[in-house]
Length: 184
Image 1 (cartoon, rainbow, N blue to C red):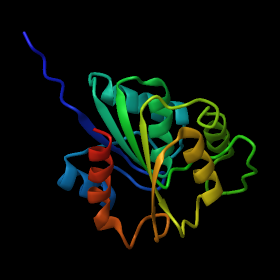
Image 2 (image 1 turned 30 degrees about the horizontal axis):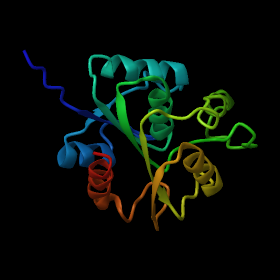
Image 3 (image 1 turned 30 degrees about the vertical axis):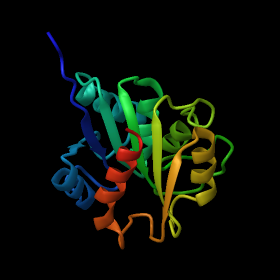
Image 4 (image 1 turned 90 degrees about the horizontal axis):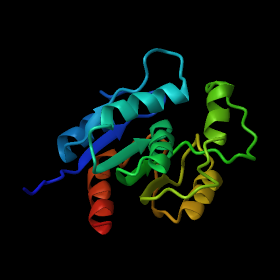
């Protein structure tokens, strides 16, 4: 008896977005990605978000995660421990080095500390890491993303855009497809 393992593609939205946002719909329609809901309410608990995503993907053995901003951080954190994740594609990931000083009142201090203490700047992610990085990102300092990308030996695609990738959003499915073909 031969088993065929299908690769499952999931989209993990950003902090202020949701599984029905524009990127989620685009990835679902163009790539067949499954957008995941990981927040239960208004208050964000990183460990609960990770637990919700892990529960959604637990029966899959070949996983690709596309994560945007905070969803990029969550994707990277999950890939750090889950050996079934084959590739991650991070769109302007919300990665914060452990030694960074952060003063953003829109994100709770506990969430920032959880991101900083995630191990993403100390431990290699055991799968292919691809990053789409906007050169005009107004939220995540480019130095943080570049430092993370270099440590993880990621493949990076630079695009001239803002954090939300407003101008080039329709190009994202093709960019993701190119990354995933490159990693085959």
